[in-house]
Length: 377
Image (cartoon, rainbow, N blue to C red; front, side, top):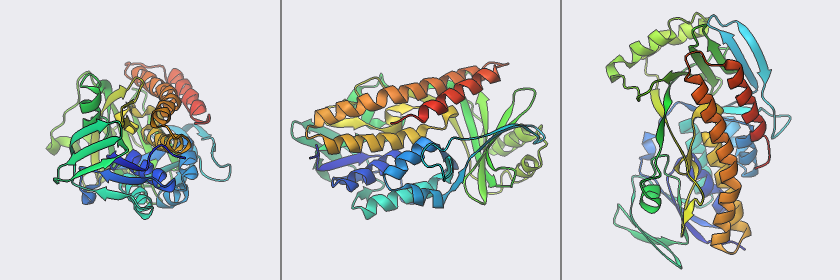
């Protein structure tokens, strides 16, 4: 069985590399087209919850990912001095004897996924873009920026929230919009106090969060709420972050403030969100990951949703002889699930934008989201 034999994947991020590995496992030949340079992989870290680990386990990837990062179970809320106000364990929904969540550096995760994909036979073209797409009843033909022309049975657009493929195939009306929040992230050395997902809250409502990435590293994040996208000149970023941390007296945060600017990767990302309506395919082009759904990060599930997409799309392409049936079923399985996670994360985002937001309500939404993520894919 199987609806396709050859597939183009545009985008070599988490979703693209995971689906390349998943398809190679079922005997589908894949070619990944990635506009970036392999040497330019940067980023702080990513958190993968139990649902993502469950999907990675089904794909044979979870052990390598756990070895490359740090598994954790604790969710802790503390005051600005580091005193614990509440603490609970994340549910171990995929394996009762293994961590409920994982933190890992994005470059490390990318390399793990690339290694598995290429070991399975996937070809990856870096520094390459798709310049033209032509479809017919028998397949899809692409022209590449390197001058090459190639043909396959299906093209998977996994090229992110600002997907050029989505724009060219589905139209410019489907594009992300700013959600009124953004986040600073930067990587620091991890202390024993940073033993899981830790939130430090001030009475003013200001929050700093910490998430572990390895035995040695974690990343800190700061949420910003602004009506317009925040723009800080590059030469002012370090001072700006030091001022954000200044009111916090927890020893680990005081230490973190001292190393801002010492070659630590700092990023700022505004929350540009998108939830594509069904269908997610037109002809022989189908969307996956952020190209179909860009979420606010309150559910820490952007990467997890892309990994689930990859698993489900590979399942449907494997079990159906008809391509249209495979793609319709993939979208039906994914759209409702992702929409629920998108809605909950966005509801928390809107609540956090209020000057005096209801933290109990936000935590209730978060618990609702975690319970939903535990349900079968």
